[in-house]
Amino acid sequence: MSYLVKLIDPVDNRAYYMEWSSICDGPNTYGMSLEEFAAYYRDEYGRLEFEHRFPNRMKRVEEFGTSERRETSVHGTIGFNRAGKNETVLSFEQILEHFCRHPGEGELPEGSDPYGKIPAEISLSYKGN
Image (cartoon, rainbow, N blue to C red; front, side, top):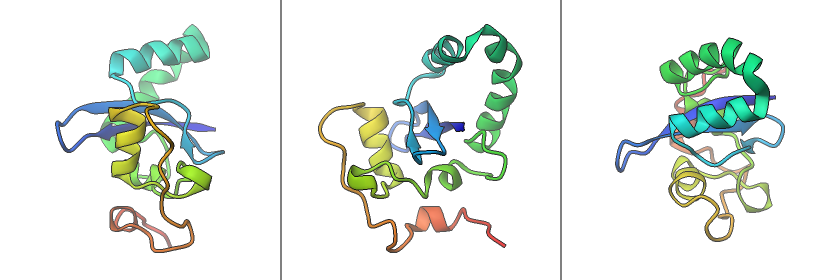
């Protein structure tokens, strides 16, 4: 299963859209503009999916930053990721840098220990029971 996410770069306020995998807990794509992402989605999933499902998913993305229904922020969706080298947890900034600002350039960054301390930006968004 995958989610659609929108990352806003705090440096220049640019929006990046990407597909996020709940299987590998990381990006399926690099960050793209909305126009590029819509074209990718249509090519990847077909016209029917694009016309019927994409608009509702994107409405949620624009409101919450994620199409995931159980989360109310993009940080909740991407926070507990395995997107770094050796499946380490990347910070929001590391994800922006490697997957959006400079997609695919350089080696995959080493993140934090997934069993270590949870970054503040992520723990603030968690609304567990």
